[in-house]
Structures are given as structure tokens and as C-alpha cells.
Amino acid sequence: MKIGILGAGQLGRMLALAGFPLDFDFVFLDPATEACAAPLGEHIHAEYEDEHALAEFCVSVDVATYEFENVPAKTAEYVAQRIPLLPAPVALTVGQDRLSEKTLFDQLGIAVPRYMPVATREALDLAVRSIGLPAVLKTRRLGYDGKGQAVLRSPGDLDTAWQRLGGTPDRPAKLILEAFVPFQRELSCLAVRGQDGQMVFYPVVENVHRDGILRVATPKAADPLQAQAEDYARRVAEHLGYVGVLAFEFFVANGQLLANEIAPRVHNSGHWSIEGAEVSQFENHLRAIAGLPLGSTALRGASAMVNFIGDAPDNAALATLPGVHIHHYGKTPKPLRKVGHATVTAADADELASRLQTLQALIRTAEEG
Ligand code: AMP
Image 1 (cartoon, rainbow, N blue to C red):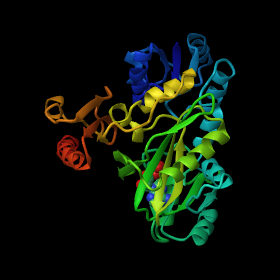
Image 2 (image 1 turned 30 degrees about the vertical axis):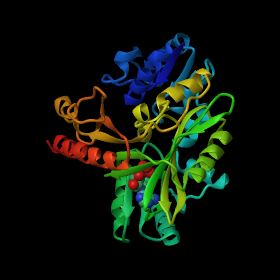
Image 3 (image 1 turned 90 degrees about the vertical axis):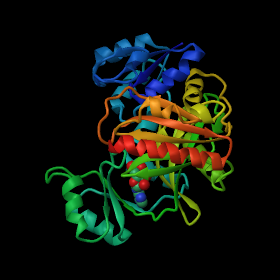
Image 4 (image 1 turned 120 degrees about the horizontal axis):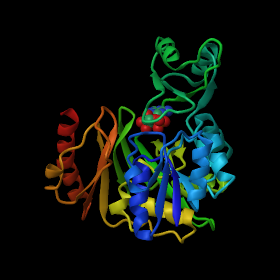
């Protein structure tokens, strides 16, 4: 089976690596010259709006998916009219706009932090009066890894944040103001839904961010919030008629889940599943879109994933560490860029903690280097 992927970044690369043993081949469409999945399949090097390239993409593959949630809606519609595109474009439309996401969560009875849309400077004042401070002002679209957002702590922060994120006088801004959540933990739930509606869920993952970027992701066996997270993910997936892996990010405040956002794709917080679960998120996404039965999401012991941000430690140093599984993405080092990750596996939580500590010391040296 030939699988088309819109986007050819590291998620596409890991989808292909999971797909080869299943006898799948890959065609990527991505405008980037340095597209790190490109060596793993055919690369149609073109803009997402290039209809000639999209037509070529559609005739080359049996089924298509995406690894990048900012694929233009028109591109997704073009593809979906010609070949099966899974998950369906509605998931992209919802996931691309923080306001549509939050509105959908509300509609489905999923708890969210207080929020208000903000289109003008006056509306920002009103929203701050209603929600209070601290609060987080975010662009509705195209924000990722903490980009496109500002924490407002005092009234003096509003002008600076507005100047950075706000619209021009002739065009309303597309922003959202959210209450700042004093969370105890951040969790994500990776759900997979098959074409027959069957769903499986990975154990929820505890995520640690720094500067808005995910650093460490640890799956939690038997977390008290597992059932609640699954219920929320199921509501969204069923509502959207979703097929594939859906990532759902939450804050935990006062022991309760508050929904932050969804990503309609495989997700950085699920990379540990390559070594840490019976069947990885990448294989399960492919199984779902190919119409195969889904695989077990059970843990294979303790594990955690640590991102390489900016630069990666040397293989020579990494390879001396027991239980460390190396993943380089083939990307040029650059400040704050995700260039790879490592999954640490261990027999139990104590061994995992000690292996993580050694790995993190190595990573700090590489990142500072
Ligand atoms: P996001 O792009 O929405 O995932 O935000 C990136 C990170 O910023 C999150 O993982 C949190 O650590 C932090 N953050 C975002 N929104 C809020 C919020 N409403 N309250 C507190 N922290 C937030």
C-alpha cells in the first residue's frame, strides 16, 4: 500500500520507519528543501497550494494523511475530494484554531480554562476585566511550541503583548485570552480510532515543558485521571468521526483535567511508544488509516522520552548509556529546534529516574555547547 503524507518532517520520518515493516511505501509532499522524511520515500517538493503537485500526489497514493496540522484547509479539501484523507479535514479545521477547539470542548461538556476571543485592543481590556490576571494571550492560529503567546501578569503587560500579537488597525486581530492555569501537571492522552470506530488509548503521558517546548514525556501506568482523559478524547474523536491518532493535551489543576488543545496527528508526547509500548503511535496511526485492526497500547515496562533541542549529544556518548534509544531526525542544529529525541527504557521507576538523570546531564552539555 502506498501512503501519502502531507508534510515531511520528523513525524513523517517516524511514520515511514514504522510503516516499512508493514510493507507500506511513502510519498511526501512538503515545500521545505530540508525535509527530513524525504530520504524515506518519494518527495514531491512543492507548495501546499500547488494544484499540479497535489494532483500528482493524489494519483500516486492509496490513502493520505498529514503530519503537520497547518496544512491549508483548501489543500486538505482538494486531496479529500480525490482520495481517502484520514483523519478527515474537519479535524484540521478544528485543530488549527484555538477558538474553534475551545468552543467544541465546551459543546462536548469537556472542562476548559476560562477563555474569550479578542479582536481589538478594547476587547482585550474587556476580556482581562472578565477573566482576570494572570492570563495568557494567544494567537488563534499558527502558534506552536509556545510561539504566538504572551503571559499577562499585570495591566502594564497588555500594551506590549498587544503590540507583539495584535492586529493592524485595518484588520481585526484573531486572538484568544485564556485564564492562566496554575497547573500541578500537564498530561496528554493519545487516542487511536479505527475506521470501524474501535478506540484504543495509550496510558496518559506526563509532560514537562520549558520555554513552551516539550522536554520530557513520561507515560504513567494507572494514573487516576486515565478514565477521564479517555472519556474526553472519545467524545472529540467520535464527534469528528476521527480515524488515526488524536493527541489531546490537558492541564491538571486541583486534581481535575482542563483541556488545552488537540493535535490531529501523531504527537511528540507519544514518541516513547516506539520502544515503550507494544505497538507504537506511528504504527497504530498507519494501521488505522490503512483499515487494519489496531494494536495493543500496553506498556513494555517503564520508559520516558527526552527531546534534543537545539543540538544533540554525540552518538559515542549516548551509546554508552544502558536503556537509551537514539533517534536523530537528520536536521541541522539550530537554537530551539527539535533535532532528535531519546527514549529511556528501564525495569522500574527507580532505574528509569537514575537513567534519565544521566541522560539529561549529557543533553544539557550538548544544548549549551
Ligand atoms: P500551548 O501552545 O497552548 O500548548 O502552550 C504551550 C505551553 O505554555 C503549555 O504546555 C503550558 O506549559 C503553557 N501554557 C499555555 N496555556 C496556558 C495557560 N492557560 N495557563 C498556564 N500555562 C499555559
